[in-house]
Amino acid sequence: MRNETFSSQLLDRLAYAFGKIDIAVDYRERMFILVSENLSAQFDHADARSPFVLLPSLCCQACGEPAERTIGVSLAWFLLQVSASLLDKVEDHELMSIQSAPSDASIITNLTTGMILVAQWILNHLELDRVDSGTAWDIQRAFHETTLSVCSGQHLDLSANSPDLSTCWQIAEAKSGAAFALACYAGARLATNRSDVLDAFFQFGRGFGTIVQIDDDLEDLANIGDHCSSWRMKKTLVNAYLKFAENSTSETRQNDRVITTKQFATHEPISSGSVLYLQLEKLKYATLAENALKRLNLAGEFQDRLISIIHHESRLRNYVN
Image (tube, rainbow, N blue to C red; front, top):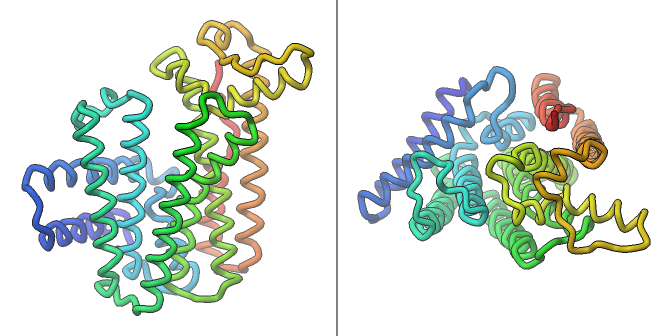
């Protein structure tokens, strides 16, 4: 299925859901605009990478079922991703960076609540994709449990003022790791109920999602002189790694230290060391994800596409000049 066709089908399903739910016109239109813009961004430069929204579809097709079965699951997962992204913008005080979004945090929070509930409505109507009740129930259960896991990870993130390295990895796996594991598990579940196959797809998604979180922290680090605040840096893997390195080499432990813009820009060993550490961690998670796929002996086309996603995200990048 062509990307344009798949994107159009997702938006058609969203419009169908809105048509069945009695909500205010402006609320519905604003939500539709935010979702459609985020969806369009997913397919920018799609020739160089596979958009994340295709993950359920690719995993389903890898198990022998057509992409059309994944419209509801893919849209529900994407709605949760968009809502999480917007809530992150609220948390990081970055709403002004979204041109089409209201700058009022309360409006954005209300819109994201709506997206989560629309996702639930869509999951309650998977019969539109000819999904049997047993499969639909299992997928709904996975969505509920994963959403709670992500919320739990977010709570830990918000509660810890300056988390240590172990806690940062726990947060990364509980948030992005769990979210991407859900996409791969749910897509595969549309095609099979074999526990070994589903576990392999889950592990693939968990590793891949953690790579995505590492990239997010690396981008924050690269933008530290731009919009990334010192408050945000206290939450990152970069700062946790620096604390870990200092505590390992210094008699005087500086547990409350956070890297500053000036320190990072002028201290090349610090910047290059933390980037190297995170790049190596990306390669570790890429290996775990790829090994999970190799256990499946998938058809060549889809295994190659899924592995290419890992390689694209895990490749070494020059985040620091």
